[in-house]
Length: 83
Image (cartoon, rainbow, N blue to C red; front, side, top):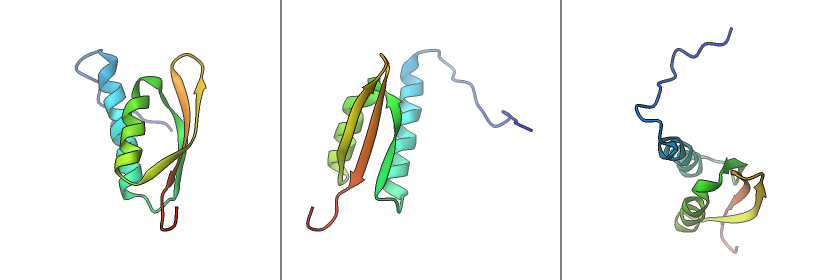
């Protein structure tokens, strides 16, 4: 049975809060992951932040494609020795 008991509503309906949550989750995934590839759909509003984050923490953008009006598909790869 699905439960949404742990979901906390935003105190403000401004989409920037949701963008911040998405970006924070991606940042944690990239910093704490043993994965060398992270891919998925992200809000187009976070595109610049994602590009900056990748360059700052040693990842590169392998693929970036628009999907509809508001979304982007990203494939991010961790840079390693010799890359």
